[in-house]
Each structure stands twice: as C-alpha cells, then as structure tokens.
Image 1 (cartoon, helix red, strand yellow):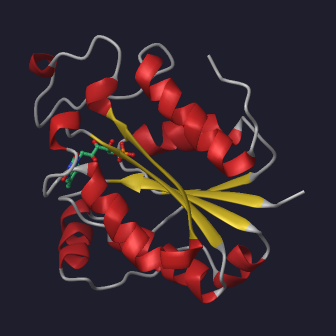
Image 2 (cartoon, rainbow, N blue to C red; image 1 turned 135 degrees about the vertical axis):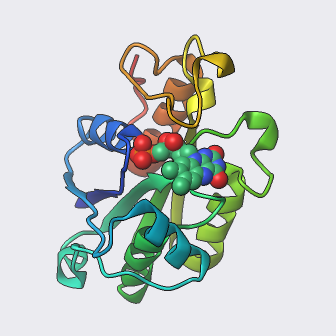
Length: 186
Ligand SMILES: Cc1cc2nc3c(=O)[nH]c(=O)nc-3n(C[C@H](O)[C@H](O)[C@H](O)COP(=O)(O)O)c2cc1C
C-alpha cells in the first residue's frame, strides 16, 4: 500500500478544511506547513519576487512517503513560496505530487491572472513529470453563495453545510485520482 502525506498551508482555514476532509478518506498522514515567515504581506511579496522561504517540513519527512498531496491557497495568482519550497523538495526526491488549491475567484475567471488554472498551470510547469492529480476548490462554489454577503474583511469559509454538490464532485474526483477509491463522499 502506498504511503501518502498531506501537506497544507492555510491562513484562514479553507485549505485546512479540504486537507482534513481528505485525510479522513484514506490512510495517510497530515501535516500543516509552517513557513519561517508567516506574515501574509511579507510572504506575498517573497512569493511575487520568487524568493524561497524555509518550511517546517523536512526533506527526510518527505522521503518517508510514496506520494505527497499539497494543498494551499491562491494568492495573487501565484504559486506561493511555502508551496514552492515543498514542491522543490518533492521533485528532488522524485515524488509524485498531487496539488489542490482553494481560492475565491469565479469559474468565469479561472483562466485569468488571478484564477486557479493559472496557479495549477504554474504548478504543472514546475512539477512536470511528477505531476499527479490537481483540483481547485473555489469559495464561489459554496452552497448559497452570494457575492454581496462578503467583503475584503468577511471572506467565505468552507463548512460541512456549504461544501455542496460541485465542491463535493471535485473533491471525489481528486480523491479518486489519487487513491483509485471510486465510492463517493456525500
Ligand atoms: C493575500 C491574498 C491574496 C489572494 N489572492 C487571490 C487570488 O489571486 N485569486 C483568488 O481566487 N483568491 C485569492 N485569495 C483568496 C484565497 O485564495 C482564498 O480565500 C483561500 O480559500 C484562502 O485559503 P485559506 O483559508 O486556507 O488561507 C487571496 C487571499 C489572500 C489573503
């Protein structure tokens, strides 16, 4: 049986929600990524300037697993620095790496500068042959989503109640692509 490690970075809980939900579906370990710098503004700037940051997860930890599942947020359409740090460690050790993002952009913007496909494509360009399954979970897909309910200060959050049909469909496809398990979570 393959050994899986889920690594997630989450500032406001959405990636944590997806990572923990996934971790309940099959035998795996799960660890939160803690970057050496965790100030959003600084981390964003470093990501923009393509400067790497140290993370708590070590290469020897990654070495113990067959496949890595990386989950993190879209910030400014970038593959953010802590995720890139993990990705590089995985590539060095030729580990298959599955990748999911959470974001807030609408489906109609998914290919735009700040859209999730932009980040998934950046990931694929770096991961190359080690690319596994990919997925995007946008908060614009939550059940009952209404743009007017949210602002820069009030962000939509995933909950068991609002992680509805389309998100679950994506979740199941992602999980199935990783593990080959084909029964659906409802
Ligand atoms: C600094 C910052 C930049 C963001 N940029 C984008 C973006 O470019 N595109 C997008 O769809 N969402 C963007 N978001 C929204 C996050 O991707 C979204 O809220 C995500 O679910 C957060 O994950 P977390 O709760 O695990 O931290 C941004 C959020 C922050 C804090």
